[in-house]
Image (cartoon, rainbow, N blue to C red; front, side, top):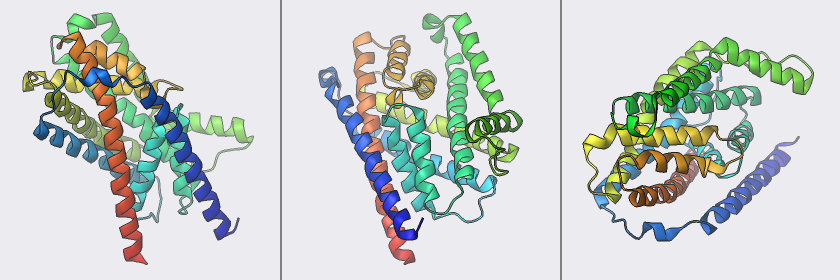
Length: 316
């Protein structure tokens, strides 16, 4: 395929991607119950802190993804700003049902910059899997530090959640992760997998540690968001709120065929927050947090697009 036709294909893919995102976002907003927000008040300072932390977590994700690519042997990578733009565009693909859109869009968009598709596939799958495991693990630890979790989740469910988290962690061990990828590749392509279609311990361990930190940043962003909406929230609630938000996010990420965990994430968050807040306030916070996430995602996309354009102009 010529360079010109590659550019045309990349442009056509971006157009199709954003048409799909716009379609499912319109469906989401059409069913959004804005009346639930009427009883909430906004405190500007915690809301600003929440926005800064939310954006920091997204840029942290770019840093982790870039680090995984380097750990997997990628020798030449585009600038951080260009990778951030691709990350932001694929991040928006979470609003399309099915996790495949989120991962495949990143592979397609980044491969147009000369990065190996096999390496991108491994890096994107590994990054997604580690994000889920690290967020889930941090949430279970934080919730266990607050006695109120015992009021809503009995010991058997917590033990089951711990077992599931451990099993998911085992799937990311390079020997197991690579065997699964290679088996799938051989079944689909009817030949042995490329040598570069493999993870390694360095990429797995380092990115897990980074996402463990990132999950705290993300959870804290929502704690300040909750504080901005409901003034009785205090730092005595921080472990519970951060743990509840992260656990709900992990549940949403692993739910198949659901855009951005819509429904499962929200139901989980409502259930957990109802242990410490009135039900009507918990419902309003859950609804508002969904709209807030969408707003921050658009800000992230706008920032990375602008920064990428400046970076490209400066290098030309």
